Image (tube, rainbow, N blue to C red; front, side, top):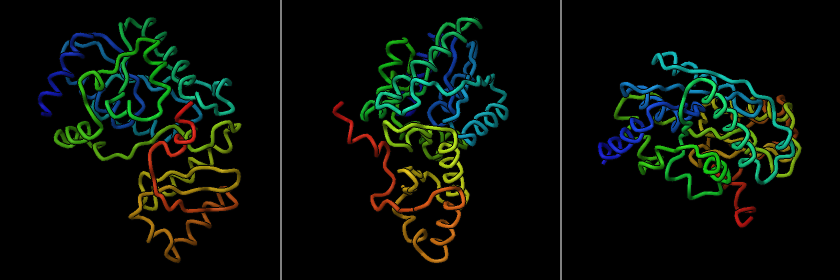
Length: 267
């Protein structure tokens, strides 16, 4: 099955010939960029757009990975788009429209024919208004076109010895803040510091979602015992309060992708 998927993907990439890979540093775009780079006679570059709401850890890992594998890579710094300053429900659509227009401009100015991204088959099952923006801009999604699921990407990455195969998903920091809430760099910095602290403490994939001055920790259920056990609990609380939160809570439902989406799924 994996060989069949790879054959489909390779054919799509070879047909495209010349393209920019929208490279976030996550599992999907890392796999896509690596696979494209491994094929001969393709004109490929990975481009990462650095914004205030993308984790610096993700950017650093993207830079390190491309350097290790000698992959052509460029970073574009982009300011916070004011149109999403209040974190509207359609922020993902607006953000994708703006950032991918920037990538298309980059491609046109640098002689690349297409812009492609790491959307996979699983991404069509959640509330993802950003997909509409990609369709409108005619951005290609080879992993989706070839039928890759997230599980497929992780399994094939593991078989090929790629270090990111089990990397937790790292959505943009705006997803930690409720819709229709004004966003500033201060709160984004607090979220980033809190999540990096949790990662360093051994809780990968943990989200720290913000509700005013309260930090709501979403983690895998298997971490619950460790987190609530003293002195671990007190250490976590103390450090998140030092970061700037007044209250710290643990979400007993645990981490789930798109946990803020059910309230707006019918919009």
